[in-house]
Length: 204
Length: 274
Image (tube, rainbow over all chains, first blue to last red; front, side, top):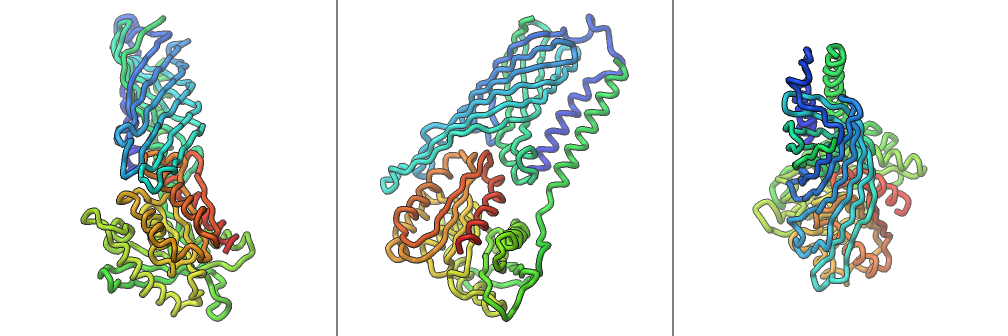
């Protein structure tokens, strides 16, 4: 069921974006959103693992040409924010940093633009759990680890003025299929699909 | 521009199709392809449930030669093929005798069978399930196949709630199995009841010869897995005098993704140290 949902999400994003492509290109000045060469888009978001992670992110996108996009995406995530004390297990801290760079393309329509990016970078995760039971009050376990971060990002910019509504969705391609082709590894991807919203600023 | 748009449409469509094919083609459960499978149904006298049992025999199985050790696999419906094929691969590589692999299918519900205490309607059936394994399943396997009848010749392999059940069996009825492969065990269950059971029974079992491998995913950060896992490991490390003990945290993988790599590492540890 999860595999079906992931493939449906990917397919839906592609089909939705495909619907904006037009056979007959209209006169740009009158009918499409203005080209934004450089934008900064801060946002907040969640991961799709029941929405227990809170994300603070920023996307900087540069379009040197109309249909060529380069981007850098940074994110600080507070993970598992709603279950910090569970069944005698206390989470002292749980956060991660992501830094990715990407390349892709942008399609324009009347009042919006749609960007598809292939992203690659690194993720740093740090968390620590301790047992609060008096029998085990000295036992703690933690992870401080770097991992690769590859994936596909879709970015929507809605509006034609200097400030605009910004939405983005990130679908990781790690660990499945880059690290492990076994679909059981998909739970790592599913827990890190990101949905982010914010207000973007056109710099140039 | 017109041709670029058309080309892009085709590229997008092709990418979608390729992605779907890739996903769908890797969906198949691994089947046992290196030996003989025997199947039967067994009804538990303890809880009335019926269990589909599969026995994987090595291709060169000898019914009258040396006794075979037996690995009892929980969630057998999902991982029997993978475990059995890995046993063949590892035993060939290490040039040692292969094992019998017994897949235990689902009875009423894995949540009932694998959890030791009743915290809801669908929990708390582990005592009856363990009774079924000890008094019915093990007896049948050891009567009908050339299996080692000592606990040292029996392994229990479980993941998630299955790992919890393995920990429960270790703590409360240490006579059944002498070897435990506990993967991402749900030791958080019912306020760490499995840890308490181990502590309560430690005095009687801490000097026994046994083997325990514990595995987890490094990315299991939902605030319930890592600390209980570490606590159980430390309890064994600090208190058991004659135990072969190892653990592994599988890098960058989560609860389900780490299962198969940890199965392989656990089996390697067992074959090297049995």
